[in-house]
Length: 295
Image (cartoon, rainbow, N blue to C red; front, side, top):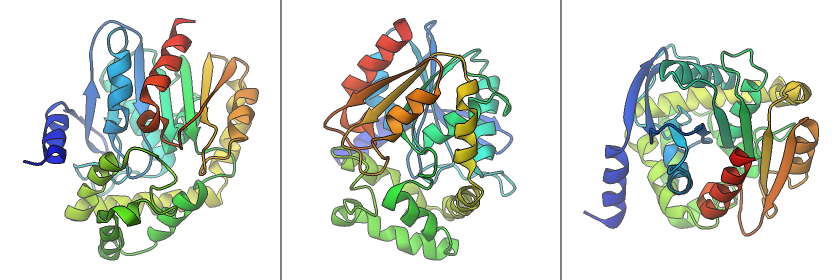
């Protein structure tokens, strides 16, 4: 077995499953009695985005990372599942309720941060105690940058043709293009290569991905995150905004702007990283989250 195959096998064996209204969700749960962090990933990613961050926090935090139906999940959702962004936010709330996690700190990167913003309003079934927004979709940057716009546009294809389109991602030079993952991570290509495997091999995942991307396109037209931003000042809990200063997908100005909207917001800027700070600077990210949780 190759090194990548061995890593995938180990990661898979560490996952747990829970059956929710939309279907089966796989997740990582470190357990323990510490404060609960629920970590949310973005489009065409899975919970392994957080592996190295979890390694740095698990000693004194309970870290729970679900793999959401964002196109890199390995178990297809039910045919009638609501795969809109608000629908997936409600799925996160249901997940937290089913696991009886109590009051949690929500941590979101990329489109996972968009989910956190929707949940901060408290009317989708979950009221987080604290939040961490890390280089994420916000305001009118939705879908985010060239990467997000290309991906959402590809959702207009039929599922079979979408699979053909995604076949190109098997090639590293294609994955490293700005329209793919090249502007999302400096160092995480090996992980990215694993993320795309389910959509290449499973018709049900292709179906879910196309439905999800079409819903995102409709949400963007409706100004979903612009409306969500208007409600951010209502969130009174502690909030940390972690932003990559070299980000080429999420505007650097959005970090200070988000922090300024939050009554208890604070900003930490991270160097030598693109959008996916948990891949590019996991130790730094874990450190700032630990400091935030202890303050």
